[in-house]
Structure formats: structure tokens, C-alpha cells
Image (cartoon, rainbow, N blue to C red; front, side):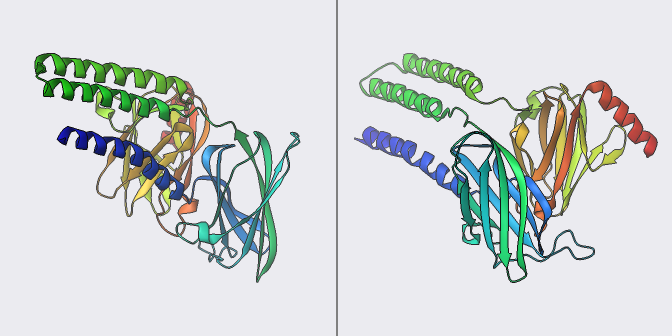
Length: 341
């Protein structure tokens, strides 16, 4: 009877945990990938972020911040919290109908921004317009987005493997209850767990979209010595990158492609989050607790560092450029920086 109760609780947990995870994700909005930063929209200024990066037909979230014009010495003006904000999505050259959606502040987690979710009917290039209307008048800002097909979801691999291991564990428990030999049951269970874990890893890697970098947030100590160390300092509301071997400090992160890089993340004030969507990297930074992350960029190009934590009123402006270049170009850049210092 006790065994049946344990297994009942176990399978109930399997059913509830995914639902709780989805509920948490559904509320984890605000911020995201910057599309506009302090762009002019008539008498207002707007900043726009989207999630995820890239946007897909089954998941597109828009966050809009509306401000008064910038005051001297400040990055942003005062937030405008009583405006009517409208999102217009216009597809290019694919025959799909456009979308017009109101964006409400009541959908925002922190109640400072106007947010909405939308399922886009087709992939391709879309033009986006943000219309703002309030006491100061009306204004409009625009940008464009690329929408892709959703990646293959491999949740079935995880939960299928958990169910398989659970059934084998149940077999082992029943065998032991009926007088089975633990010297045979335990090795069989261990083999099943190891083989299943290897299979899940292979299938997950094969069905997960490739990132522009290989990351190792937790097991950095197993990766050997890094080729390059960069100290990343987060503070309200800017990033600083120091190359300790040369003493160079910059506001842009320059990385050589194909090299194993260790990022030492620290915060000088509050909790920040180092996010690079193209790297599939999101790492919290807690003051007084340095965090090490290993990154191996695989493709040259320009990307953005964003702060994915709400770290204060100007967190939407906490951006930095990442430039991944060839090792030779990186060495030339580093030499120039040392000469400038």
C-alpha cells in the first residue's frame, strides 16, 4: 500500500510540474530583445522589446515603454502611464492579413510598460507600428521584425524518459518486495538511468536549434583552461568589460570566434542578468557573488547584451554590443586598444 501511495504522488508530480513551469513562463515578461530605444513618437519617446529572439509564429511578446522627452542629464524621461497604445503588424509580400492590437499596461508584471502577446499567422518579414495617444498628443514609431517557424519542442523526450525510468523503478520496487536480489536490481536500474540520460542528451541536441555559441553556465570547471578571460561588470545601467591580461576595459564585448572564453560576471549594486539571446545564454548576477560562465562563439557577427532582470527604472537602456570576429582580427583590435590606453 505504501508503495502505491509513493508512486501515485510521483506521477501526480509529473503532471503538475510541467503546468507550473508553463504558468511561470507565462508571467515571465517584461524586457526582452531591444527593437527600439528611446525612439521619437510625436511628443513621446518609446522603447520596444520583443520575446523570444527570434520571434516565432506561436510565441511573440511585445513590451512598450512610453516616456516624456529626455531631460538633460538623464537617459529617459518620465514614464507615461495613461496613454492608449496600439500595435499594428503588417506582413510583407505573403498575402497574410495585418493585425491591430491594443497594448495594455495591466498585462505588465511591473505595471510600468504596455505589453501584449500575439500569435502571428505566418513567417517572414513584418513591419511593426506603435501608435501612442495621450494628453500630450499622438505619435508613431516603427520598426521591422523577422518571424520564423517555431522550433521542434522536445518536451516529449524529457517526460517520456522520466516515465520510462519511473516504470523501471516500479519494476525494481515490486521485484524487491517479492524477494528479488538487490545485487541484480540496482545495477539494472543504474544501467537504465545512464542509457536513458545519454539518449535524451543526443536527441535533445539533435532537435534543439543551433545557437551562435556553446555555453557552459554551471560546469565551467570541467572545460579545462580558458583561452581568454573577460571580467564583466554590471551596474545601473551599463556594462563594462575588462581583459585582465592586458588591462583593457571597454563598453563593448569583443570575442574571438572558436575560442573557449571564461566570463567572470560581477555586479556593483543590484541583481542583474547577463542575457545574449543568440547564445541562448541568460545568467543572473548577484552582488558579492561572482559567477563564471564559459562561452565558445561559433559564428562571427554582431549581437547584443541585454539585462534580463528589472534592475531599476533605466534597465531597458542597459545594452552593450558583442562583436565576434576572427582570432586575427581580435588580436589586432586588442593591440589597438592597448595603444589607445
